[in-house]
Image 1 (cartoon, chains in turn blue, green):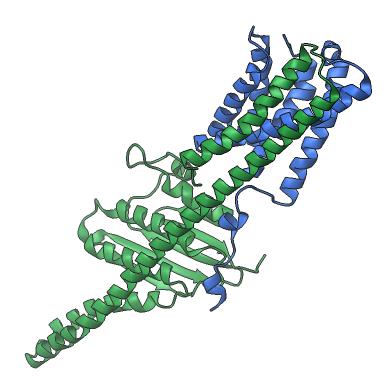
Image 2 (tube, helix red, strand yellow):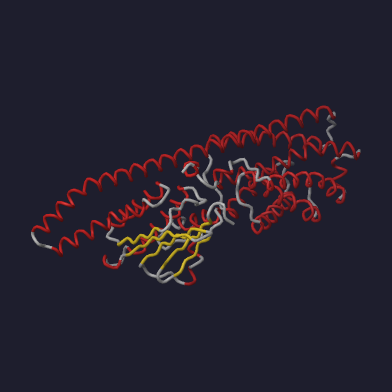
Length: 166
Length: 280
């Protein structure tokens, strides 16, 4: 079973949770507040850490993670439940996709198996760095360009068209 | 913020969940040293990527549909407001002749004082209509008229000062109506338990060089110092359970548009400052 070392919690899991939350919230058009994202990310990472200690099959921790993130988003950002689930799903799915795209490539380049990497604390964190960078770049781009799945004009419009024609 | 309708939301979550499950399953196989040829992993990657993109497109479409639905509902409300305003104007015009006849009758009978009081009451109604017509937005004018009529129905004196047409306001009329509607409803609720002669609600709309200033005051009891911030928190209310969203919504809309809201008491006055479009 996959157990997370404490160092991976600090250097991998917490930044990963911050990015998941930030990206999910940005894409769902929810206002980003760092003073809420950081505690929510820390709690989510701690949940993930303790869940991995439990004797449950691989993959179930991700599903529990989605529920945990959705509940945290609902509590910290006071969004509706469907929006909170979408935020969690978006963040986790993008992370999983980036991981799936990068991981085989990195394993192929390093010539190691995932078990060998997970056994070494250093390699485990190093393997996570490229995906964190890609995730951070996507998040940064979305924030910078104000890219959201919702129409920004719907919420942050300036003047109505009929008034412009006056 | 609107909530997604259930089928749309479910469809998007299923699509994203599908991609996630394929990811997890593939990782599971890799984790247990199952030797999967690189070619297969590339194909799986493409399927996952495709599913993720599809999921996002579905989610985006669902959200756009939801937004359009909201927009249609807002437009319907605006049309209803406009119809109400037109009805009010028609009613005023219809009543005008009757008022003139009544005043003429009183003057004929030499009842000058009664005629003066009657005219003061009639011009009060007309003054509100005339003041609201200064506003560029018919939706906002209709709301103010509606609230003035509501106040009259609840025996509340309604003071109205409009010194701006709100032409450069960077807030959509429906959002401004949410701000004013909530503040005026709260003000009216706050004075309802007072004697009829003491009930007073006042709305002022002014502007300076940078911003518009909307003030809603009432003659109700003051707000305690320690509650001045709390009243803007969602769920906080002095009116009972399942209340307390109005001021939280007002603050959210005001902040979204770069404005500020403050409250002073007594007398209780909520002052909303909203920047002009094109300003700092």
